[in-house]
Image (tube, helix red, strand yellow):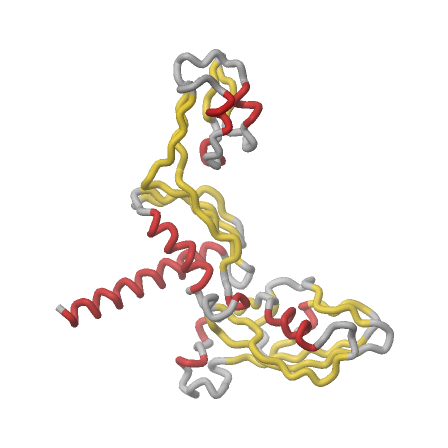
Length: 264
C-alpha cells in the first residue's frame, strides 16, 4: 500500500491510497463516520424555556453541537466505565446553559464543568430569545460512536473515488471541445493537443469522451488506487480522525483473527 497526502487542513484531509481494494477504501470512509468515538450532549434537564422553540427542538440542536475535548482519552464510553454506565466523571461531563433575551443563544454559551471540554465552534445558533424570554438547561455529554447516533459522528463529508487514467490519442487536433465541456478543468490544450493536467479532479463523468471523436480520448479508473476526502465535524483534527479510524480497523481485524484462531 502507498499513501500520498494531497491536501491537509485542520478539519479536512485528502489523500491517495494505491495498492488497495475498494473494500479497504470504503472501510476507512465508514470507520471515520461511525467507529471513531467523540463527545456529544446526551441528556438534558430543561428548567425554563419561554422561547419560540419546543423543548424537543432545543434538545436536538444541543445534541448536534460538536464538542472538542483536549484530553478525549480520559473519558470512557458509559458501557466500558467502572461505574457501569450509571454516570461518573470518568464517562460524562456536565454542562449548564443559562440565557435571557433579547438576543441569540450561541454554542459558546454552553459551559462545561470540565474546562478542557468546549463546543468546537462558538457561533452555532441555538435559539433567538425575545425580550424577557429565558432558557435554563443543564445536562451532560457522553462519549460514543457514530453508529449509535449521528450526534456522535466524527466524520461528516467522507467519500472516495478511483484514480482516473486519462489518455489522449495522437489524432487529437486541439479543437478544444473536450476542454470546454469538462466541468472541473481537467484538460488543457498544450502544444496544440489536449492534455490531462488536473487528473485528480476528474469525476469520471466522460463528457470529454462524448464531445470528441470516437477513440480520441480514453478514460478508465485505476482499480487499485483511490482518492479519499475526509472532513471532520470539528471535534477532532482530520488527520487524527483518519489515524483513529485506521487503528479501529486494525483492532477489529486482530480481534477477528484471534477468534478464528480459537476455532481452528
